[in-house]
Image (tube, rainbow, N blue to C red; front, side, top):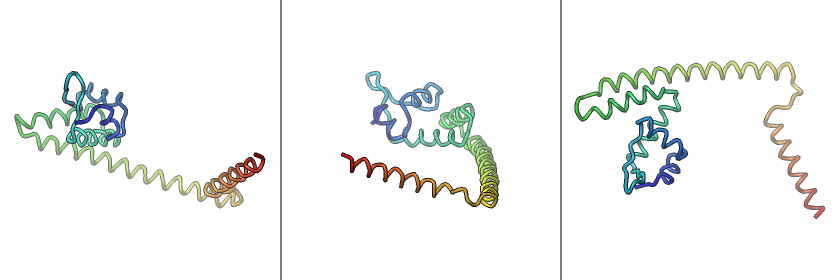
Length: 145
């Protein structure tokens, strides 16, 4: 069993975020002497919920999925859960397509700037130059001391 602090580290989230998801009815820790306790199943579940949020599934839809999941003990909710996840999958695919189109547009814009302004240093050379400048500054200050 994990404390909220350990659970926070395992899921790379803050205790505040964990409490929020509990309050929203999306996470169900066990209680021992008034303290939250989580197990590996909770870790897996919460990572799934977080992934749904990362892909912009609204909290209400996640709550619907959770309700269906919990109701499976009384009735078969497989079809409803599948339909909900398939609809979300379609949204994720649309997001990916939009991001790919945006990436292409930005890439074309960068290429246009590079053609129009070939003397402007690119990001890699700027980073390399900055590191070189910092290294030289450190070396010079070391020589003074």
